[in-house]
Structure formats: structure tokens, C-alpha cells
Picture 1 (spheres, rainbow over the protein chains, first blue to last red):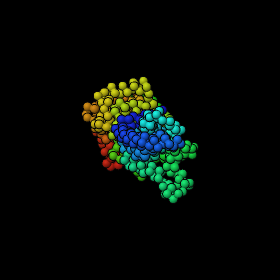
Picture 2 (tube, rainbow over the protein chains, first blue to last red):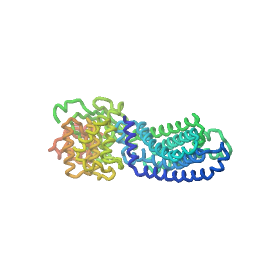
Picture 3 (cartoon, chains in turn brown, cyan):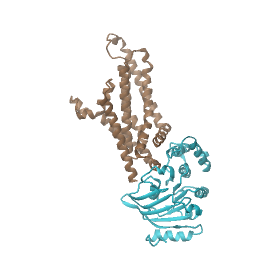
Length: 251
Length: 253
């Protein structure tokens, strides 16, 4: 029940913060603009594509690139959204109130993390609603769209976990946001050098979020990629829990 | 405090509790007992270890050594006991600035295991008792310090704890509110709630407490009864300990 109490508290805090709504509105406005552009390009190339029956379709040219745009701005939006989860508690001096209520560090971290997910899910669904609104006019590749959606959902969940972990290590939300942004970008681009050198395998490519995210965006669902995201979430939440438990010990 | 209440088993027992903070001993070998209905005044200069002691009793901080028992149960083995049994008003009453007074009470109630009708009933009662109706929908971030103290007090009392831990509760309250706070403390004690009140103001202790403990450099230097007409004696004892230092043995009487 304490997990639910922390979840509800954090969800309420998110819902009453103007920042969350501003981020949602700006994010959707940008994605709406991207959708209009992608749709325009798709319609402009319709005659050429009529000659290639097996060529890229609506999902490849509109839905997946739109989700790709969402993934790009998520690197900035998710850290901003999550920066206050634990850093804000520490700054306000409210963390001891949660400890005093007998809530273990693991439930504080998990409750706060879970509270971010409905907001991120809403953002993803509203973005997805744009291409889906016109899907009845085409014959979309539903499997590819589902895989890409899963990939973005996992990416958002992983970025949120990364941001919660960054928030656990400071009492300044802005620092937490910057650290989470840099860590996210580092995880995405860690294999850039290897890619440029033409190396496709190896540990460095396995470590990169882009390797696993791009597979899913291409419609390739593999257990290994899903597990990579689950592992990242678990490691980040474990680090945040450890740090919070140390806070209670240190005082 | 009635004789029946003083004979009751202690709500709180501290047994040789020790805690280091920032590389120095904040509290050392602290022994304390508190029976239901007792009001204990905790005195000490800044850095004496009062807030550290209260944080440990409230469950926000773990002692390095020693035992804390609530209603006879080991609090360190079962930290969730704090949820039911302890109400804590920390110094400066921290709040979530983006939440309203009502939302604070709901959040604290849920964290302390209250739900549904029980939560609504407890919330309504405490809002009425502390006259928080005009502030109910106001954001905590724009409350004055005195209003925040009242909100913190409401959160501490919401789940009707057996032990109420108040760290400088009269901070920023006006004289009328201080009077109301004293009345509230007496009312809680009469209902059987044990109260620990940390303060710098000696008159607070003689006004509402029936026992006083004086901490100095993390050690308990005095623990004994106090009477309302005992202010001068308490002042002499406190300044004797705070200004000149004293050995625990000398003050055990």
C-alpha cells in the first residue's frame, strides 16, 4: 500500500506542475508539425510509389519516422519531467517524511518511477493517434507499427529510469536533468566510433541504446533487445534505491 | 498526566542509542522512556543532538547503535511501526510546494495507512480542530511559515499516533497560535498520546511538559519532572549545563 501511496503522491505532483503540461503541449506541437511534414512528403511521392508495389508504405514513411522524432525529443523531455522526482524531495526536505512513514527506499524509487509511466504512455498514445487517424485510408503494416511502438515505449521507460537515477544523486533538479540528458545521449552514441569504423558486433555495440532501439524501429522484435531495456531500467532503479538507502543511513 | 497513565508500559524506550553525524558524535548512549500521556520537553543548545534524536525516534534516521522500542517492539527491526505509531513534525515543517493543504493531508494519510472513509473522516476532523478550512485549497508553497507549521502539525496528528514528536513546533507561530498549540498538546496528552517537544524556549517546557530532558553535546544531562511554577529552577539547571558543562552523573538527581 505504501507503494501505491508514493505512486499517487508523485502522480499528483506531476499533474499539478505546469512544467509537465508545457512539455506535453510543446512536444505534441512539434510532433504535430513533423507529422504534417511527413504526411505532405508521403502524399507528394504517392504517384512514384504506385509503380513499386513492394516499396515503403505509410508506416515506413510517416508513422515510424514520427516515432523516431518522439524518441529524439524524449532525450530532452524525459529528464526535464523526471528531474524533481527525488532531487526535488531532497531540496524540499520532504524525503525524511517518506522515510518516517516507514516506506523503504525501493518503494519510494519504484513508486516515483511508475508515476512517470502513465504520463509517458499518454504522450506516446497521443503521438500515435496522429498517424492512426489516417490509417484507415491506407493498408498499414500493423506488425511493424506495433514493433516500433514497443521500441519507443521501452526507450521512454529506460530514459525515465535513467532520469530517476540521476535525480537520486543530487538535490538540484537542473543538475539531475543535465546529467540524465548527457547519460542518455552517451548511451545512444557510445558505439558511434565503432559504427563509423564499420564494426557491427562487439560489446560496444551491445552497450549502445541505438543498437536495440533501431532494431525495434525497423520492426525487428527480439528478446535480447527487450531484455537490454529491462536490464537498463533495473540497474538504474537499483542504483537510485541504493543511493536513497544510503541517505537514510547517513542522515 | 494521571496516575493510571504513568503506570502504563512505555510507548517509547531508547536504550543506549548512539548516532554519529558529519564525523562527530551527535547522540551518545541515550536512554529515555516515555509513558502514554506524558509530555517530555527536550532542551538543549544548537547542536546538542535534539533534532538527531527526534529524527531517529520518528524513523527518518537509523541509529548507529542501541535500540529503540515502540510499544515494546523493536523499531529498528520493524521500521514500519513508525507509520502507525508516530506522528512527526520536523523543524521548519517541510512541504511539497505544488500540493494544496488538502492534498498534503491526503498524501500523509495514505502514507500512514489511512484510506477511503477513514481518511476522509480523519482529514475532516483535523482540518476542523486546527481551523485549516480557509487554507484547505491553498498551495503549500505560498503558505506563511506559521501556516506551514500548522499544516505540518495536522499531518503529524492525522493518523492519531500514540507518540507525537514535535521539533520546535512554536517556530513562526504568533502568540495566539502558541496558546492554541499548548492547548492542543495538553489535549493530546489527556487522550493518552505521549508527546516529545523539542524547543529552545524554556517557558514552553514549564507551560506544557511534565518532564524535561536536557541534552548537551549528544549526552543526556538531566531527566526529571518539571512543574509550571518551576521556571527559575529549570532555567538555572539548563544554563548550568549549557554554559558550564556538567557530568551526567552530577545531573542524574
